[in-house]
Image (tube, rainbow, N blue to C red; front, side, top):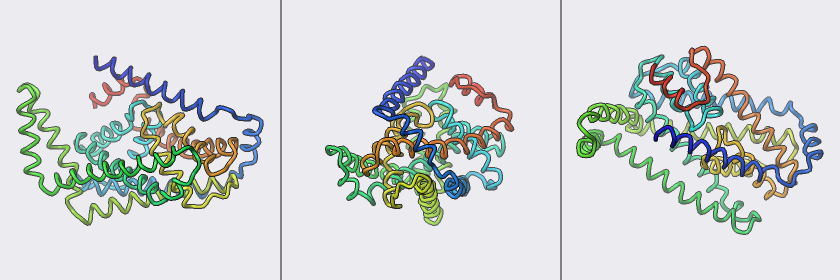
Length: 341
């Protein structure tokens, strides 16, 4: 049953990607698209790639803050693991890169996998709050875009999303501030609903997960996590700006922040690895709403996709093979590999 459900999710993701790829590439003049790509000033990508690489380093720094209650780990150790994780998200289904990251950290530093995954969940919540914040900061411009109310609805969605993510963050902060009552509550629930045979193992995993939230107990640590999250996404928007310069589209930084926020909101839709299709359709739609023709809009999105996807995937793959992990697109084999380790 478990295997069948995963296969079903994979096929649903591929179907969603196929639909969005059709939306991204429909009604395109391909000779004009080729001319757009041929005219790209690729030298402009270098500063953007440097900013993005700096953003990966800041991601590593942020993870170090999150892991501090579990174990102090050097940035030098964490940097390859971060790259492996993001590579995994780009090529493996069901965001298995997050599991890979936790597994490699376990192998390297003997940090519990459930504790590591707790820090990843906190990362994702902070990321979500920031990218939704990018949308809300530019809500007036979003509402003014043409599109039969679609963008106005997206603004409403962003408002609800930030409320939900902040609520989740508040729960985690409460758990971190009052760990003992939270631990007692969770253990009580487990003891009531889980058979005795698997109860102790699940309680141990839950305790390790709670330990992974303890960075939120310190206001200074929580502020640094928020600060680094904002910095990460500003640096990534720097790559959006660099691609904008390479194609000469003339967008301002506020518009690019909005583009970044909207694209990443759409990436919440489950699709094939790397947001195949969803990223491309969202990017083209937003740029056309800014008044950019279809071919330059799609050309921008394709160049941006390559810049975001290729470098970190290549670097992550190098570190992946150095760890002695086996390359497979099969979810069950990947899980078996992590369980052995």
